[in-house]
Length: 446
Image (cartoon, rainbow, N blue to C red):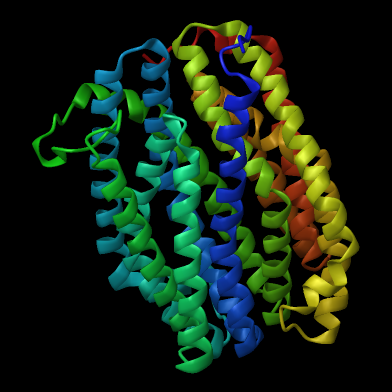
């Protein structure tokens, strides 16, 4: 059937549904580590949580460059230049390998000092678990970075079903590895880290093999022969560097807040980890749709189709609101049962339940404006404004608000989340103003 828009309803379903499933599977890896490690006690949950806070910062950098590559590739595809799209795909892999290997080589020998600097005087058993989990996670970064780049390329050519199936494989390896290494071998957090490493290696290898296929439009055969293009890399970095700085600032702020949580004790760390997982559950469909926004808006902008850029921005943002509401309602009802799975003490469970439920409400009301609209702006190249809005809102509201409420008013872990909601409200308002203002129409990537 003909459609007046660039993507048919069938195209959207074929792209978005696997991405939502992929988002769920990606979250499941981290969730499996936390839930399965919880059998080792609150200290183990806290140790994994602290590492994940640092890890998320580094993963954000990989994702930023993958996003930069995806925007450039999508716009070239929309423009009809498959040669430039293919060359951009190869150069994205070059960037991913170089940055991830350097990060791992630098951080691995000084990991204990980083933990000390960031989180101060945490309890000895928490620190021990943190180090056990951190080593294999660090070793997994090069594989994860290349995997992120390959999946971004695959999404750009609308092949999201494939990335979903690879995520299924990774989850089978991760959960199976956790079951063996934690429950049978007794390695605790170290076992969870090794299972994550194995799953990321497998995902990287499988995606690389698939993208080597001669029939692939954006195949990466001849990767060692180039072309290594500073011109294309520069275009990707124009998106990737501001996105990386924005993500880095965001997660540095989260680490500072996590340090504040650590000062409240092991129970507070564990509660914060559970609420963080709840936040991830609620945003599973939204994260999947956000990935689709990069591809859809990027291809529309590459074709110069501003009418569809506006249309799909409204449609996809509305879809994020609807799907988030659908997933949050049942989670709100079963919150006590879900929280009890984490192995917390009785007092911690009773404290976590209202915080989790409020998080679900805020995810429906505020999250789409704060995290879906900026993906539209990234896809059209308006990344400097995103950096400004995110940086300003993060440091004023999330970091400043959290320290004010905890240090001055003596509040507990719930204050961390109140401050975060203020951050979502502020940045969401800024992004909405930018989208409605129309200045993004003048932005160019290719």
